[in-house]
Length: 284
Image 1 (tube, rainbow, N blue to C red):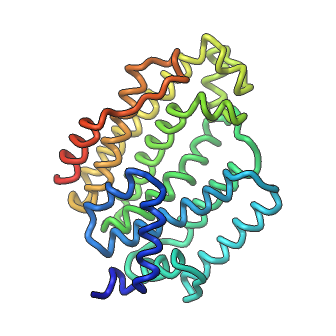
Image 2: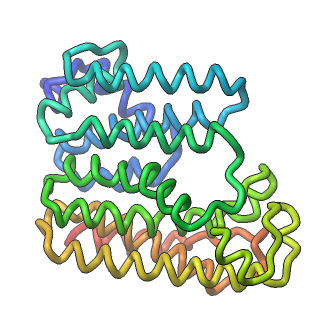
């Protein structure tokens, strides 16, 4: 049987294996999609994982810039029929099948370059939103097209849900990021609460809980905006988005229940709750 998108069986297997090996719930979550859309999403994830690793792995900045530039060239090649590996070959087929935009792929790379260029510490809110929109919103714009909705409302979902998911990630990882010299909390919130703008010093500040609560409120507002935008979209196409939104909203709820004074304590969802979310939102 010919693999989805007419891809070479070895390429389809390699892309699927890349996602499975990442050990992420994304692999299971995308099982709700039909085969062609699922393989497209696996290839999008594979691309994002590769460029994220370029930004995050230790290495010389000049080398990282060069490798990210090579990926900009590979993305351009998707639209002229030039490919050089399983991920780009499957992506090229996804581009032919679905209205995936070159600008959105490039925005993801730009977001990864923001991380690679310097340790982000206390960005102003406008810069934080730019970062969220590149590393999450642009991924969302690619994803909703693979899901089956390329409407303006679907782009609104991508914007708001991308921000909500990324802000939740930031709140979950405050302690870990500070250990790496990074602090993604917005400068305006930190200054207003009297929190130092230096990552390790911020962790010890009594005002940090107030900052986290403010950012959590911002995440909740974006979840609500995403839900409102989803109501204007194709309901079936938005199933994976609803599933991701519900999962991350549950993570945010768990973080709030744990409290912002215990940032070194992991806030994981119970397996039963993950299963309930998967059943509730994966089947509706």
